[in-house]
Length: 136
Image 1: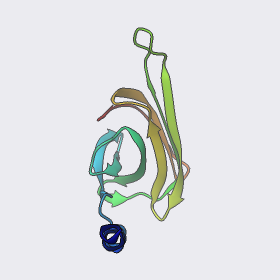
Image 2: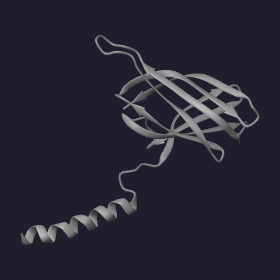
Image 3: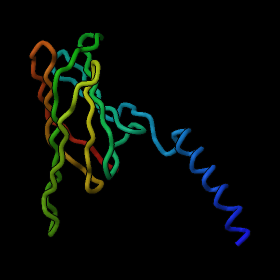
Image 4: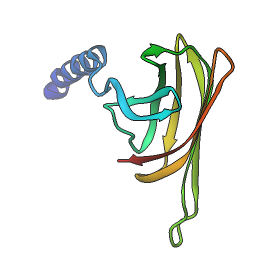
């Protein structure tokens, strides 16, 4: 009984320290970049990697080195069927946060995902490209 009484406050303190320091969360870093005409598009993900499960994403776009104001965006991805495994689909409708777009996406499993990204700038221009990402 005494060991449990001593162990609980220690575990509670460690858990609080873990939460306050943000351990277990990775910074959003460039995970994928592509060009579309004059636009350079960066997709940021935790630790610079797409991972299985739910992860946050951010989209940052520049044109000739200048940040582009964004209005809206969507990322639609799928993994083709393989044998008995059916096709899987995922996607995210981004929300505007300053000059970036943010949203969470859920990957059911690791492997190659493909699809499209569509971004609408504040000026009303639509940027649309095919995309392939590798989920770890």
